[in-house]
Length: 88
Image (cartoon, one colour):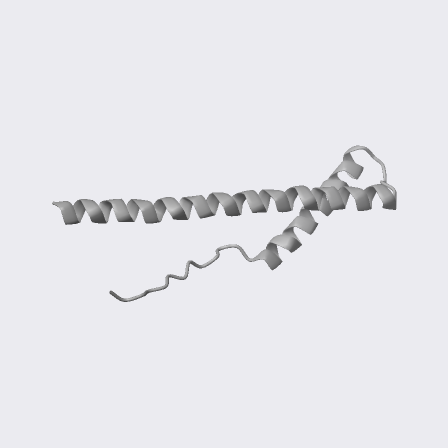
């Protein structure tokens, strides 16, 4: 039996995600300011960006966990089908 390591490539570039999260936070603030004809203070803007970034990174972590579960299910399915073929 040979040892074979499988490298599952990550489809998410976290540098791009980080940039997108910042853009999303800033867009949400700008949209709020436009809709409400107001300008947020620097303090409120900073706190909003901080909280939005935290919440969106949490979403990314949840997506990573779902991806890990999905990969586990793929390997389990492959093992089950292989076993069925061997048993035939």
